[in-house]
Every structure is written in structure tokens, then in C-alpha cells.
Length: 275
Image (cartoon, rainbow, N blue to C red; front, side, top):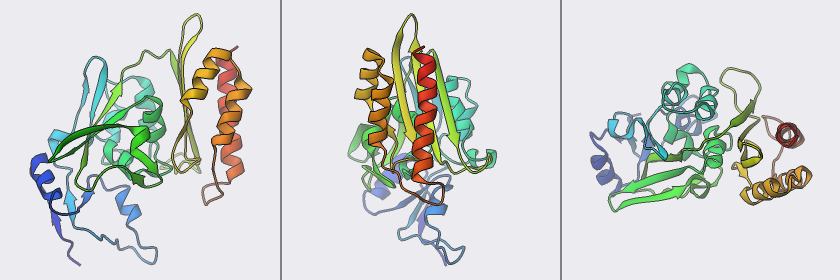
């Protein structure tokens, strides 16, 4: 079967094509090929023509803009993991994604737009208050990652838009905790993932916590974080987090496992910070 496709030479050419027809955007394809799988066989079903975009160099690169990091949407996960520009709290989670072979082709933008419940970059980017820039022929608009993700596999990207870059505020964190649990070390599908970022001098000044792969989209509670910073009420924060969980048993693990282990790991780290 021959698939209808285009291979634009520039972002402008891509946007012109997307303004007149719906395309399935294909960059690294590591998430897309799984989503398009037909369970009875190895073939993939693509309902729309494909736009191959991995050749668009204008959508690549990592830049330090002083107060932000600018990440091109086609930057690979391995480029994030090995960047000499980015801090450890950004590199480490990307280093633990999938295998080296997959990281060399999987893209930052693809992992975001795929919006899988197990998308490992989403909790990190939500904790960092990252924003994405969506572009069409009509112009650009910027959305926080927290607003972009509606639900599992659902985003607010319009059919004529492409995610061109991610903007991540630079923060002077004192430290971080990142934990990802799955069936095996190589190419693991997350049962849960936790990112905790903090800035502590004489007192704890900033604290961000996000949990992935439990709900259909990552869980972060900014208001509860502020209350925790102000009061030190660990039990109150953990209660709020527990009430926000909406997990379910699936092939990865049970609801009880994901929620219980997430709360236990976060409680352990918070007790260290507030001791």
C-alpha cells in the first residue's frame, strides 16, 4: 500500500500544506508507529496523508536565552540528555527515557504532542512551568504545557498548527529528585514517574512536584505546593495528592501500586527536605 505523503523543504512550506489539508506529522515516529498499530498484524493504519518533518533543521537546537532555554521541537531526546547547556535536572529524565537507539530519533515535540499518559517528559515540563509555541500560517500562540494537554492523547493543538519550540524558564534549583519505575531498565514503559524540584537556603523557598503515569495526564498541585511551603504540613499535601489521583488497574500495574508507591516515595523525600 502506498501512503500519500509530503516532505516539505521548509517550515513555511509545511504550514502552507497544513492550511489546506489535515496531515499526520511524522518526525521520529517512535510514538506514532505504536499508536497506529493494528493489533491483528504488523501493518499500520494512517487515516490522513503523512507530512515527514524530521528534515526541518529550523525546528532543531537548544539555546540558552538568559532567562529561558529554547528547545526546538525536533531536538532529539538524546540531544537533551547529553546537552552541555542544560542542567542535570533536565538532562537526567531524558537520559532515562527508552533506549539509546530510540532516544537518537525520538523528539522532544513528539513526546509532548503524543500526550500519552506515560509520556516521561510531561511531568518534568509541567513542574518547570514550560510553555510551547504553536505556529500556523496565521501566526503563533503560546500555551503552558499544563494547558496544552487536555487528556490522554488529546491536546489543544489545532490541525493546521505545529509545535515549533518549547520554552523552559531557567531556575536556580538547589536540587531535585527524579524516579521512574517500570518493568525493566531498558525501554521501560513507566508505571509511575516522579519529579521533585526545590530551592533551599536557610529555608525551603521553592518546591515543585509532578507525578506521571498515574492519571491520564500528569498530576501537579501548585496551590497545595504553596500551602506546603507556608505550613510544612506534609500530611495535608499528601492527602490533597491522594485525592487528585484517578488511577485504574491496567497491564502496567494496579491502581493501588501506583498510588501507594507514589505517595510513599514523595513522603520520603519531603521528610528529608523538611527535617
